[in-house]
Length: 221
Image (tube, rainbow, N blue to C red; front, top):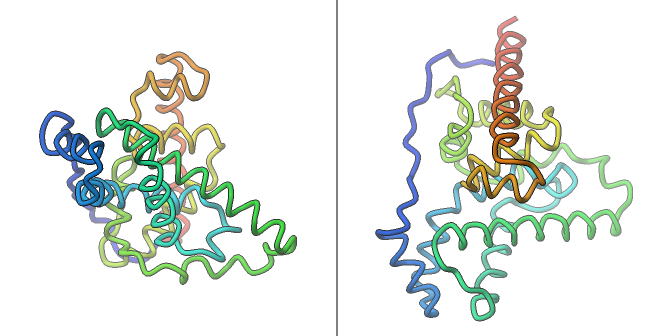
C-alpha cells in the first residue's frame, strides 16, 4: 500500500453504563427522542463500519451505508414502545440486530430484482461519502491501521483482508470489537463456550493480521 508505515493512534470511546450513557438509556426508555439521537450518535461509527464489513458487495453496489444505517435507526425508533432497553448494551445489541435484519432484507430484495446484479459491483466504494478516518477509528479496535496519508485506501485494504476471513472469524471479530458483546454473549449467539470464543477470536485476529501484513508486502513489491 502507498503511504508510509506510521501507526495510527486512535482513541476508542468506552461505554459507561452507569454514567452519561446510562442516563441516556433511561431517558430513551421513557420516550425521549433526543436521548435516542444521542445514543445513535455514540454508535453510528461502529454501525457504519459493521455495515461496510457485512452488507456484502451486492447490497453496497446499490445502497449507501449511510442510508442503511438511517433505516436501521428508524426501525429502532419505531420499535421503541415494544422494546425495553435496560442499558446501553441492550440498546446497542438491538441496533445491530436491526442493521443485520436490514441487510438481509435488502439482499433478498436485490437478488429478486435482478439476478445478475453482481455484474456491476465495482461502484460500492464511490457510493458512500463516509469519512475514512472515522472508519479507521473503528477498524483500529481490532487491527492496527498502517497509513495516515491515504485513509480511504487503508480502509479499503482492511476491508479486503477482512473479506477473506471465514464467516465465523468475521462474526466473532465484529461481535467483540464493533458491537462490543461479551465473550459469554458471543458464545450464546454462536453456540460455543466462552473459552472457545476466546480461542476463536485469537485465531481470527491472528489470521487478519497475517492477511494485512501480506497486503503490505504486496503493495510495496
